Length: 154
Image (tube, rainbow, N blue to C red; front, side, top):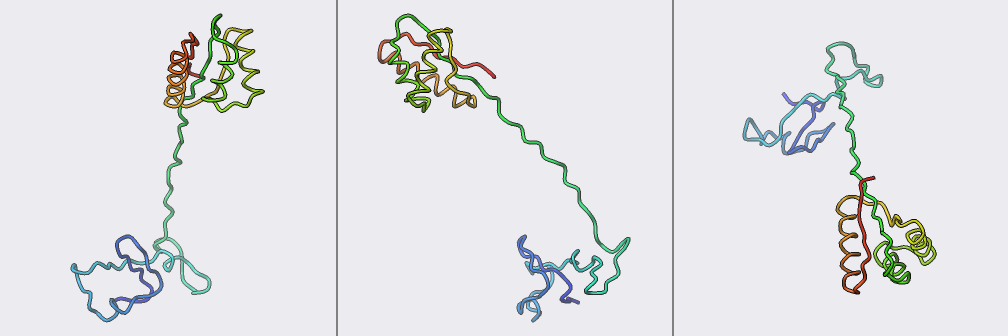
């Protein structure tokens, strides 16, 4: 017997608290029916409005889901190396074009590369860092500059 206190499931969708006219009319019977009736856990629990009796064996259960741990991807630093032949303006243009740096920040990084021999352009995931290194190296070769760009794991 089907009552209004049952839950209807149809292809994963839950329809609680009512039965549509199709199923109530009895035109859906047995294994041929796409609807299945299951006891509603919400109805089986103690509900003060309903005056229901809750307790052990009332059909309620708590399902504990394990916490999913999100692993962050490894990050890589993209570095420019100093050389004696690449013009400073070219390095600034590379920083603006491929690393989206403003004029002031690009100049600051370029001076750091010039004074310390190496400068960090940005920190990216492996694929993005690899792409940026390739783009910078290709651009430098195209313009016949020996600028070196590398990546290292952070």
